[in-house]
Length: 400
Ligand code: SF4
Image 1 (tube, rainbow, N blue to C red):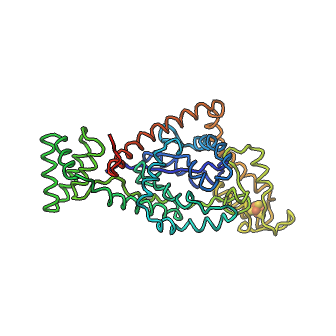
Image 2: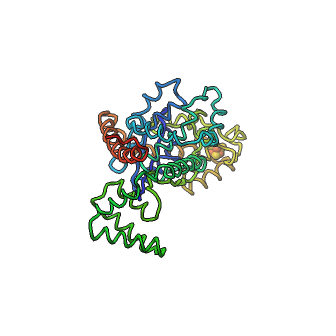
């Protein structure tokens, strides 16, 4: 039994924009108060597609972490770290590759999709084919059982579950499992060890579920057990092997389609973004230049908000009264488009104000952000080492 833990990450491939904020970061801020969270700068993942232009990665790493903090990710509540600073990711990726059928990777729906979408790049590489496996290693390394994803990413969590299942099946029955479990019972201590055995027998012989729950609770509160022994005894309780890598669950996040400046989804590739920390003049200029309903050629022409990208931003930033004012004013030509855009400008600037404030200390003293990341990497490595100890042991690699 492992604690609920969330693992999520982002590739450092350029400035973050409001689409990232509404689509991902707002959710991270919520999750960090509900679960233990690890947020990862996925620089190795960035290399799978940006290997031919690595300059953008280095440039983006620190800025991205400042953007996270600006958005409200709190280093006191979440672990922020860089993937490549925790080399155990690469080790687990390699070890999992030993038991991952090639066909599982080839059938990940996004694989062919992405190759087609990015036809200008040569993605016929091993790194690109293997990136869902690297993603599985990222999750399993922290025994992250909760993975926040949108619908389209669910297959990635599914492959992670299949890999964990296969790994546990192949390696969970370690050599001498029963003897090791018996030895672990002795370590619990006389009275407690006896109780564990009684509860185990009641569950296995009579199917007594209450006994199973009591035994689990007993293991959870027992202090003098190593992580490996505890997991061994959880497995022994149910007659199975040791569960080394827990199966993750998707934590479905509501789809957010943050509209961009042209009405399409906000995305760097469409060139329709507003950066998280874009300065006020630039924000105002971009919104003032947004296209509107083409029917409003002159100020006196009535328009239809349904045909206007500005209206989509009102859905994000305006209250009901403002929206009613827009509909009435647009359809009757009672307001001009510049007038209509002002509440959106005000809304974006109000959203950004606390972000600038939170980012300021880190911009003034860049060592602060480096310290946060160094601490995060250390914490991540501690957890990673725990998992790798168990993984190496069951794979026959724990030489001493
Ligand atoms: S008044 Fe507003 S909603 Fe209507 S066309 Fe102009 S910007 Fe768009």
